[in-house]
Image (cartoon, rainbow, N blue to C red; front, top):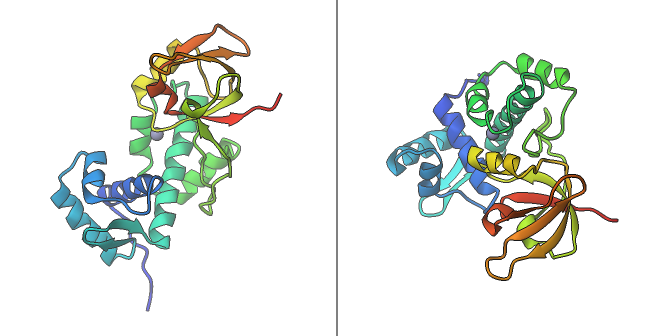
Length: 226
Ligand SMILES: [Zn+2]
């Protein structure tokens, strides 16, 4: 039997990526959550899950949600790779702000030329992280290992490095810009407000600022040992 590699549609790819994203938080992805992520109807997600299961990308049990097969996971990781490489290119080489690139990368990730993406990776010198601090899978789908925690869970007196924004909307990225907070900065957690849990942060350079718990739940950090 000859295996013919067929291209997936944009919608099929979007579903795989949504399932991958939801599986970061749990073993399976539920139809209603996938529908919410993709702003579509649950009934059309159900149809798509059947289709993706027939093609061997997804295991789908009614009421138990969907999970990617190894083949589906590999496909999703390649989409994540393309998305994050394009975001890096847009910020590093075309001068876009980190709050301006997600939507553009959502379109570019569906360009299927493998040669293009490998050249892009070479051109960028094989970056391990994108402008939001998210890890970029390599061509074999491997992700760099890194133990991160939420800034919201840090103790007063801790010194931390701001390493990534998790599920950051453009509005959140703009808010961080306005506070002078960027990826890679070392911050001292100087205080926590008793009333609402907001955190007072002192960067190694630059003025101190305060962030709400809501913001701190989106910021990933790694500890810095003095
Ligand atoms: Zn993005």
